Length: 272
Length: 163
Image 1: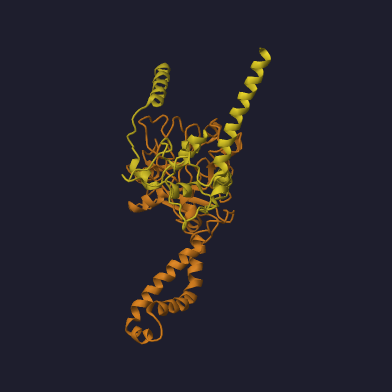
Image 2: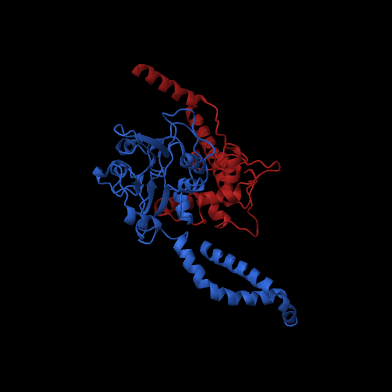
């Protein structure tokens, strides 16, 4: 339904454009039909011509809301650590803002969906800065150990916690080689509608699943990085050979952190 | 004497049971139950609810429960039966522009749940107001409450022990 509405809106816009350009001729038509009627018939013609194009665009960017996610996509992220700035944490701030996470002044227990790491090579003194978050593994250890099935991998490769079945045992936090998960220790208020979170459950990066389902085709962190002019984070579909992320990976490659674990992570790094 | 007491008590029990049944029936079958606080809602003749009112009154949780798994697991984001959409439509601002929280009895969900003595935990995690209201109320400098204090104490203790 949603999908159809978008097309209608587009037609409405086109219709307005047509309306402006034919103002001069309008008088003649007004004899036989009202302005609205004329515009409606113009819309019908315009709609036919534009509909296939609009449809193509729509399917490329967003799945219809009623359609379940499929394994055709595998969402992932490519992080270029050569571009990532040491003193910048725009991705972290954006993530916190997007999901309504705020710190309670207690770094040991505060929620951390994405964090910045600075890694120094002792031999050369070179410092590499990189964001670290859930790596959205193809074979996630957190899913392996979860006793209730709350930790799961969605068909499109996004690893999530189903808080409805999470019992807060934190095995997944122990199993995760990336320390990507946080536990909520206290009662919360004012959670955002798209990011429900509550005491006694584990949470982590959702790869902005609400944005992905909406068809934004980007995450809050990547958007923030691009806004600051760094463009170190690239979100995309790893299964689509024509996506920017796949092209970049094919051309320049990208490594997994702890590749030895054979987890086939969805988040890849360049410059490590 | 004892027999009389038992008889009297059983009559009393019957009367109480019947009274509660009557209340229950009036909740389920009455068009507009007079005893239940009137909820604030956008619902009217034109913008009907997603299901008939009688159906929603009895089964809304079943719809939400089914939709929940579809959304979390399959990424189906249709608006019908979505909890967020219930909130967006039913939770409206009062004359002062304030939105009721679930802890207030004027909150649409709470108004009935409190009356019917129903305990739910949806709103421990989920938003009980539309996003605009929450963004306004959000307080990044949340004060340290009792619970936080307990965690602070624990962390300080384990920190000093490790030293």
